[in-house]
Length: 211
Image (tube, rainbow, N blue to C red; front, side):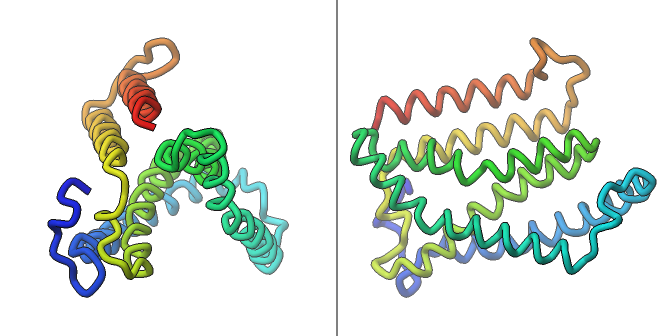
């Protein structure tokens, strides 16, 4: 985003798209083996308390497909609705995309993570969030392949750099929290959670001022 048109394209896509794809599959492989071990240990510990043993695989797959179709249908209309909100309110596509659209599309992750925390599957909750972030960046590579005018990040508003830097900073705080592990909570939140919250609020304020 910073280099803009100075990036040498490969056909119509940016070179960074190739890096996104390679890093994504490497990360998914690492996460797969890590979470496979975590899931095995979790199921082993919680086998006695399984709540869905009476539901058949066929029923589970059917319910999954029905809910997936509902999500996909809603997602088809979401960009047009978001564009309408941006034009009607004057907030701009960058602000609306970063706040309202991002919030709407992230609600499934919120529900899954909270449910996992209630079940005591903390690693699954955190892995879900980090994994979602990785996949969301991978989507940029997919979008770049469909955007034939040139490298997609050369056409976006530079205000997105603020969101990108905020995401990097929030992830860095999370990594530090995983490394040093806070033993106490302040005001119901650990220090790393407070830091992530403050960075997010600062990101909202900056995007609103630049709308």
